[in-house]
Amino acid sequence: MVGGGPGAFIGAVHRMAAALDGSMELVAGAFSSDPDKSREQGATLGLSLERVYGSYQEMAEKESARVDGIDVVSIVTPNHMHFPVAKVFLEAGFHVVCDKPMTNTLEDAEALCRLVRKSDAVFALTHNYTGYPMVKEARHLVQQGRIGTVRKVVVEYPQGWLATPIERDGHKQADWRTDPRRAGAGALGDIGSHAENLARYITGLELEALCADVTTFVPGRRIDDDVSMLLHYRGGARGVLHASQVSVGEENNLNIRVHGSEGSLQWFQEHPNWLYCRALTGPEKVYKRGNDYLAPATQHASRLPSGHPEAFLEAFANIYVNASRTIAAKIAGEAPGPFDTDFPTVQDGARGVHFILTALQSGRARAWTDAAYTPPL
Image (cartoon, rainbow, N blue to C red; front, side, top):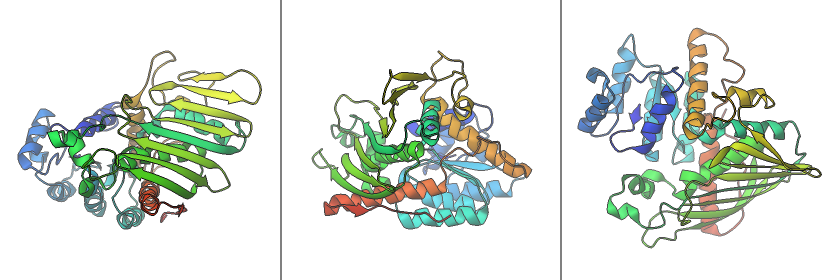
């Protein structure tokens, strides 16, 4: 692991997710740019101190020289470090799991696409909401034509934790997430990218154009904290996306509605085990996680029987376990299982970066902006 040192939120989430199914073991880390903090975190995690490093460059060099060296690196640093860390480890022959957004520039995102192709590495991006079983069921129902042709997508991700300038009080997570140099974009990159990815994952639709209103509400803040936009998809569907970190009273209310010509779907991240389905005629149906009437991919993503809630960590773990199975198959020279490659890839990362930058461009111009994009394969 690179990043995830003392006081880091997402690093601990990644470690729990990676460990949940017993398919990965944390054996080495460069947990902080401060060598003392890295050693402190390594000791807390019970690692051999000879495999706790003062820099990610040292870790890549020394682990590549070990017979028992790492197979994969998990990158959980602030956004601006994703590219240099991923580049070093890909060039050293390692597989990569990376937090989102993948990079801060499209040039870097496309460079990673080419590096992954050249190295034949597995690259997984932790858009963890794609790991929820009922999100996979929604995707299945759309693919099967159960709601007809998709006409309208409404996706929103409101939070309220940045409604005041807590970054000025030394709040570690707020500090780097509101720093343009390290974060790249604010609410748009942190949670708007999740909303766009969720909509694309469920519907399979690709963006054609967007018109974004990108706002900073908190005085003195140097980065966006609220965004609303209209979306045009290839094929004629329309969409609305809203992401905000200044919506007082909201916690983590990611939700999506997909309206088709014959029905609609609705899913709430804060109530993730239910999927609401409505048709032109007849009563509303509620699909529940853990039941045998669900699609095979949905059942594959569940660990518990029906009635036992599964949520954030399990969804995150689905990214890790699928990536680990795909990596293990590659190492063994075998084909991965039928569901094992179901995780966001380096190309999804490039699409996400293009979306963020296009929305920022549209916000500055206050105009519709071309959003069509095909990443390097």
